[in-house]
Amino acid sequence: DIQMTQSPSSVSASVGDRVTITCRAGQGISSWLAWYQQKPGKAPELLIYDASTLQSGVSSRFSGSVSGTDFTLTISSLQPEDFATYYCQQGNSFPLTFGGGTKVEIK
Amino acid sequence: EVQLVESGGGLVQPGGSLRLSCAASGFTFSSDWMHWVRQAPGKGLVWVSRIDTDGSGTTYADSVEGRFTISRDNANSMLYLQMNSLRAEDTAVYFCVRDRPGPHFYIDVWGKGTTVTVSS
Image (cartoon, rainbow over all chains, first blue to last red; front, top):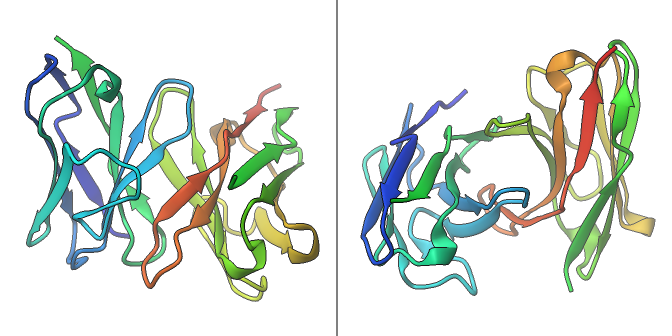
């Protein structure tokens, strides 16, 4: 199984801040990674796939990048509706595996 | 509107069985792979199982292999998860999800989830 290690597990930030979340794959997965946002009591929503492709309808303040086996989700200017938990997921092979999640909290 | 609606969750004793159902609408169900993903209370997301378009190919997480069976009814746009020999650690919200069309495996549509509680 491909282990996905996400960091940090939580981050406190203010509206307008730039926030960066990292996900490291335990082995090479090329660019086959997705990011999801989950708000309390709700199902997750797809933000980015193929490491850097924005899902239709998602704000352009979200962006993704990859360097080797390290993947990054960046929120350029945090908005009130962005306070949530974010998960990465490798889409390379089964079993599909998710990172442990990063909770973005209000500072 | 693309929609997935799960049902069938509930309280079951250890060793018992449940069958989850998922009604799909708003898209061509028979064209898409489908999965089940679960989330234990206060925990992260865990992939459970997948099924291909005609049901001939299935894959399971090691933790449920041999106990859970995924199936589908394309005529009625329904996805199922038969869960046997349930354990306390199977307690979770179970999400029915659609595999995003393409060569890699991402989830672009999620149901709201159905809660399974395994407890005596």
